[in-house]
Image (cartoon, rainbow, N blue to C red; front, side):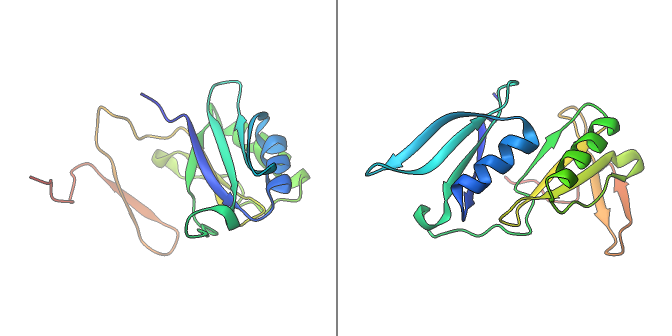
Length: 154
C-alpha cells in the first residue's frame, strides 16, 4: 500500500496547478469539472505520486491549511534539497532554507501560493522497523528518544 495523492484546497486553481507543475515536474493527468467548469485537477509525478488540487470555494467546509505542512516529500540527498531550493527561489517562492538537523535528517520548507508548507526531507530517520520520538524545545532545538510515551490503545 502507498499514498497515491494528496489533495489541497487552493484559491486559484490555474495558478496553483502551474506552480506545482513547475516546482515538482508534475504533469496534468486529469481535470474535474462541474457544469463544464474545471474545479479540480490531478497532477502526477513520473514516480507515481500525485497532488490533486481543488478550488477551495467548492470544497466541503472551505478548508484553509495555510501555514501547515500537509505532506512531506522525501528526496535522495541534501544536494537535491538545494536543487529544489534553487528552483523555488527562482519561482519567487518563500523558502526556509535547507536545514541540517543532524540525526533527524535535513529539511526544506517551500510555501505554496496559498500558504501551504510543502516539506522536503533528506536522510529521514523514520522507518517502519523502529521507533523514533522527537521532542522540540520551542527554541529551534530538539532531542530524540527511542521509547514511545503515548499510551497504546486497547
